[in-house]
Length: 488
Ligand code: HEM
Image (tube, rainbow, N blue to C red; front, side, top):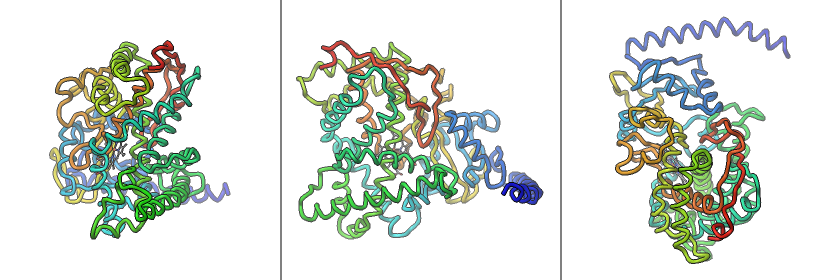
């Protein structure tokens, strides 16, 4: 095999050099004709994909963006990622432009790897995709605060049980895998009314799908992409079964329209739209996509909150005081309610500061529908775009001393418009943000009410699959509060 490989390499090399020169020449020519943004498009086909992916894997996805801003332009630069020519629009103006031109100049774009794993994410006009668009439109109604209020006590109950079984009585734990398990169980309960402990065994399949979503789409045994395709097949079958059963239960009134998010979703389709949910695998794919994309962000935010609270004891003390005031105002055994959540203002500022420094969605893609000019540069039709929270979150102009952990930035009027974009903005502002806020705050409440903790690894590396997480999962030593506090 080896000599054959070398032979192919020797034959291919001149062709590769020729192709590179052609592309370089073409790039320079078209840059000067069209005044394309400054930047490099890297190797043929590969572009700068390896730089992009390796910055994520090494835990510094911001480096890819900030290095290029310094080198080329603070407004806009070009690159080529995942086989696509791509421009990054930077700063508050870039964010504003992206959030204001949705479906006029730009539309969502999903990496080929993601479209192959979850085909209904493709935005074209097949009936399946129309169904997905409708499902997506319903999500904000289902996840709005009024609809979520009824879930708060159930969420607190599940969280308390999680702490009893996974945290209490232990000297040391690893935070990230426990949080993953918890958010998954919670979502199964609140979204699907599924409580079967065996469902937890499916958790790894979800993460295999998530890890393959932004990868090089090589379907070869052992690649992240291949694992994701296989995992998706199993999950699709299981979720389709749950959904078909639920439809039956709803039609026979064995399930109620408000019992969980799935019932809500299935009963909100009416009249002409009803037939769209006849395709259970469309709804299944959408819910799986939602669980993967949404919950990776929540896991990341909770885990990094635990990390920063360990690093800054004075901030931990303020969170502790706020949460204990709430805990002490409750009767024994009384669960948290919606009003309690509204009182957790400082705790939410802490979580927001965590998501400023470590945005759970580090970059979002779009596709250009019509050529346009931005900051004096031409952005051609068909190019891909990316907006990245790093271009504002870590910029001293908008967040002085950007590396300093300071939750007071979110007090008063808070950051300037279009600078803090952890949940995006415009028509695609994250519809899951209230659910995320609820989950994060209920977890923080239960965590600080019971423990202080210390990090076991002083400089643990970060890695990014979909969202960032500590490479070793954040091992910590637990220091339980005195018994009387613990029982509050
Ligand atoms: C801390 C947690 C989360 C963060 C930081 C986050 C962040 C984001 C961001 C930045 C976007 C905008 C994407 C874009 O511009 O294309 C988005 C969209 C979305 N998020 Fe979240 N998200 C979180 C949790 C959730 C959860 C828990 C759910 C579901 C329960 C969810 C559901 C969605 C959906 C459905 C969209 C697509 C909206 C659309 O395309 O119209 N997210 N999220």
